[in-house]
Length: 390
Image (cartoon, rainbow, N blue to C red):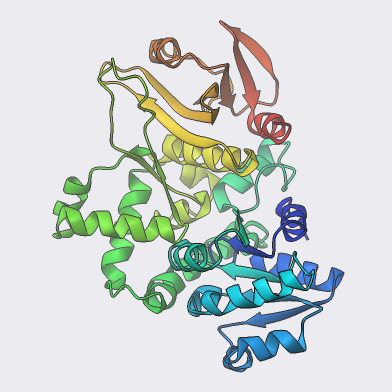
């Protein structure tokens, strides 16, 4: 079993908050983390997709009274978002009794309902954490072979740890089909599975590209507004990242549309039917896939306060990733797939515009070295380790 860093963060959050919401797509490992916590302390685990468990909380106040001294773990809580209103009174009552922290742990695979309902009902009583796929540090991807395996298969545990590439791809195809035919309809939107699969595949083809709703709308024969709604859905499901442009330099002509990435590289490759590493290297998506893979790994290690952006101007100045720690501190990160990185003039111009505190080039090699002008070339695990120290 691969140890996940977030397990300690969940335990810490339970020690300072009455309730904690752990969000992430299905099959990413939320339940495993919850069950580990369940084994370590008095806890009761309920899967709200199980009819019997759902019935147990039909009177949530009575259920809590029977389990007052245990952490109550509610899995797939987005199925019953109305429960948060009832939990507010329970949490406040326990606070008055001196039981302030660690009462509930919520697991959810969709951020939209969970965030909306819980923030309205449990303001000041809940902490939020997001679980991403297994990353390069957790997988100990310190060799090119392990890093490439993680890149090809993605961070979902069942896919990454499959016996071979064929089984891994089969698992990811089943995952995609389940989301399209079962999970998304359960959340409410009535979008034809075929249409949404085409949209998802288009996003994989333009991995790391500027999002143009009108262009995609023409291909799917729907309106640009509908395409924007599809994107909102995929972002809410934590399957797609919408990276906003950094726009604090008002004196430049900036690209203002977001860039989009299918968040898990393995899902990207499954949508494009890329089974093995050679298939990946021979496909035009290679550069965009690597960029998205690096960004997701970096953000998995970045402090919660960090806000990510990209930067691009009309004259070609560009930075792949800006990490804004505060209004006074930001890092500029360029991402290169080759083992001998060469920077374009556009990166230097962009750094003059942005004035970052640190400048990095994340590349496919293992060494760390200076490239001049305060620029450091570093491996993906290397920059993730630096971020964990911030």
